[in-house]
Every structure is written in C-alpha cells, then in structure tokens.
Length: 177
Image (cartoon, rainbow, N blue to C red):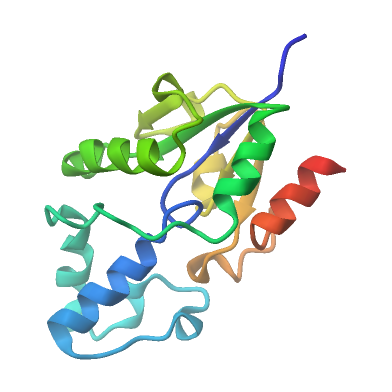
C-alpha cells in the first residue's frame, strides 16, 4: 500500500531558528526582544532600521544553524507520523549555502529515524512531491500540488488564508482525524 507523503519544513517548524535570531540580536545590541512582540512580523521588521541588515545577515554566520533547539513535541509526533506516512524534511537551504552541513547534522542528530535520503534541500518547494507540506511560510504553498499546512510562528500569526496548526499537538490531531 502506498503511504501518503508529508514534507516538513525545518526552520520554525522543527528547529527554533527564531530563538537563535533573538539570541544573536541580544548579543549584538544588548536588547532582548520578546517573541510576543513579533506578532505578524519577522525580527528584521521589528528592529530599528539601523539594525536590519545585521539581523538579515545572521543566517550567513558560520554558527547560526548549529545546535538549534528542537521545537517542543516535534520529535515524538514526527516519529508517530513516520509509522503511517512517508516523511521528508524540505528545507530552503539555497539562500544560505553554509547551512547545508549544519542542517544535515542537526536533522540526523534529532530525527535519526528519518533516512537522509528524505532530506530535501531546495529553493522552491513547489518542486517537492508530497501530499502535505507543513511550513511556517505560506509563500511555500504557491505551486505546491499537495495541501499546505501553516505551522504557527510569530511572523505568520496574521495569516488567515491557510489551514493553521498551532503546535505539534495540533499536527498529531490533524493527522489522526
């Protein structure tokens, strides 16, 4: 029997890259930004204009993608889903070439039950062949042939056009229904 496929984005879906942005920003400017204050905005949109280019450059720093925290509940739910679905990780790594190796190592360390052949590095997720795409950026649903599922993150909280999953408990519930 053919299993349906679920493609899962990495950053802000299973890996807390926003936490890294916030930590780097506090390191560089001595200002602590609360996630709640980012409702509907990316960090670079919420900081003073003079800081924006520095923030936008963070993913280009060599250590940015190393040792990111795991989004709560993601490992257990992805493991459960892998028993009934074919799981792929689809991460847009083309913009930051220094992210390939750290992302591979991170996925292997935290989701070792998903085979490395199911790690997809792409620039345009419309090329991903899956029944579902769990992503924090609705723009990645454009051209995607399956069903896009918007994983909640501060920057997308004002988006009401897509099926939203607030957390990994809701992901579990969606795929159990």
